[in-house]
Length: 286
Ligand code: PAF
Image: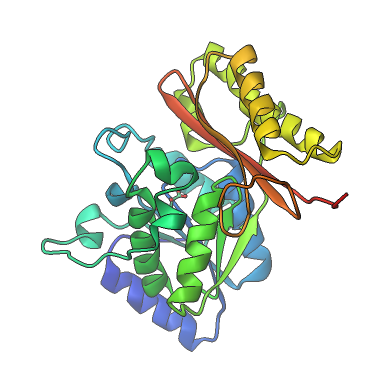
């Protein structure tokens, strides 16, 4: 496994791979690797000749009051996991290499998918930072396929849009959310939870399942589904709800009536830790 920290070194290695006709699968991460990331790596290993994993805690996607400084950095364990799972190249640039002095170019997207829906409402500018760093990484790695986790539903929609709009020749593959035994979605931020918070955190997934069951039982009013999901979290935890919403999975706009597939998505703060989760419910009309 090659560990690359500079852009010229990465470009050289990628050019060699390309010359040899190798297909490239790319898994972008901020490290603190868990089984969710590992499922993306495994998928890439199945579909591509070479798997490139990036580990970069991107300062541009954290708000001034967010956890950039304390975001978990678990380099030795990450490298061990990447090696064990057969990653060929780890790209771990410095912030200075990615955002040198005078950096002035950003990927700016329509606020209706970045800033006015779901996580964007409480994290303004977050997806601007995500889109910019991923555009840079795609230019550097030039992958055939990029693998993303469904847990970050809005990120998947935003990056799909960006790749299409900018005609980036990379296919985006979204892999299912990997869950703990009790259903909690795996996330690097789970390690912030106290044991009491960890127990309560399951209320978020349970609420989404409750919403799904209501839809399966033919409830079609989004407002009723969302109230039931909110009530579940409020009754079963001390979590503070940021949002619990039923939205169109393609546009992320809130729905009034359930028709076709629905994305049930939520963000809840347990103590100081904000967790997100979602499920897609296919709807059979009637
Ligand atoms: O999902 C993440 O870990 C990050 O948002 C990503 C895609 C690596 C961009 O920094």
